[in-house]
Every structure is written in structure tokens, then in C-alpha cells.
Image: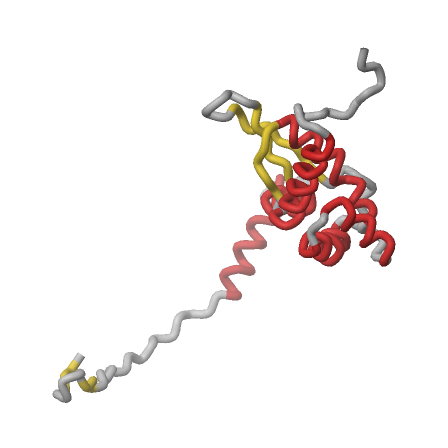
Length: 185
């Protein structure tokens, strides 16, 4: 029986599984999103989120611990320089797994795993939602029609009559062609 054994072995021996997750975590950190099977994406989420939490504190010890998992110097540098400052105030949940359908060849469930703070489309949608203003009711003056008449009178007094624009004749410069002859445009 498998009671309280929550590790998904992914049909691999432990060495192969650790190498797979290490490479996928490095790819996720460098590219910010990857497409893989749903089972691998869920296993990767469990693998990479503690590393991102560890990267919030930029010490030599935490860099060495993260490097022991990732085994890629460029991924460690990217994690500590760009990802850690953006997730510093987030208390967890750094990744998102989105199901995208089935693979053509073997109908495996596919998923997209991405870093939450690096999805520009979702961040742009949040900014629009935050800027939404409340709708205000109209004042009682406008309901009676007095304010609209006063507004029309002030607009007419502000508009100045148009002054006629004097047109100037434009002189077209002569352009030399490649053959040395002068030509008019």
C-alpha cells in the first residue's frame, strides 16, 4: 500500500527523475514558462517552489543549496537576480499550471507551467481591473435641465472665431539623380 507516499515517481528511477526535474526547473527559470505533460508540471511545481523561496535570501549558503538542485550556474544567477526581487513580497504560489489539452501523438494531458509574476498578459489585465472607477450618479441640477443650458452658454463664449490661414506657396527642391542629371520631384 502507498499510504502517505505523495511523490510521483513519473515511471523513472530516482537518478533519472532528479535529473529530469533539475533540467525542467532550469528551463522554467530561464524561459519563465514551459509546456510539458500535466504530471511532470505538477511534480515540477513541488520541486521548484521551495527553491524560489530559498532565493529570497541572497546568501552564499542559499546559492549553494539552490545550485545543488539546479546544477546550472546561469539558472541560479537568473533566479537570484531577476526572479527573487519580483517575488519577494509573495508568500508562496510562485507558479501556475494551466491545462492546454491533449498531445497529438499519444493523447497525453499537456500543461503549461509558468511563473506567476512574469505573465505580462495577466499583469496587464490586473492593472486595468485596478484602474476601474466607480460610476457616479448625476447631480440634481442636470436632471432639471438648468445646468445643461449654463454649460452651452459657457462653451459658446470660450470658442473663438477662426482666423483665416494664409497659404504659402511651397517650393519643391531639385533633387540630383544617381546619373548626375538634375530632376524635379
